[in-house]
Image 1 (tube, helix red, strand yellow):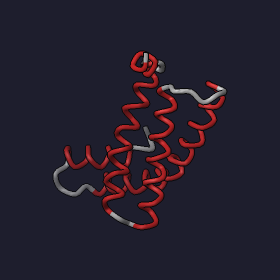
Image 2 (cartoon, one colour; image 1 turned 90 degrees about the vertical axis):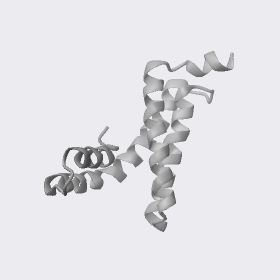
Image 3 (cartoon, one colour; image 1 turned 135 degrees about the horizontal axis):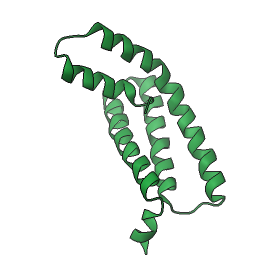
Image 4 (cartoon, helix red, strand yellow; image 1 turned 135 degrees about the vertical axis):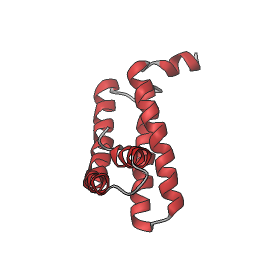
Length: 117
């Protein structure tokens, strides 16, 4: 939740305060400092959790979630280096899908079994 907070705090601030709000901007700047390390930590936690939970590679919502976390982190890292707006846009899109996959993984971790048969 904190890792995605720069996005939703800024969006909520724009919705609630149509004019620039110094307090919201200050909060977003502080949250941005945490964003990159938390993304890296999330990737590490996903890898460790996946290995400890499954032990062997298999198709699972967690596997799909892990791939999306990896893509999100890689897109964010590449954007940081190259500063290409399209990469940032894709980083955001994939991050939203990652949050949805986190919810799916928490609610129905074996959902892919039902789809694949």
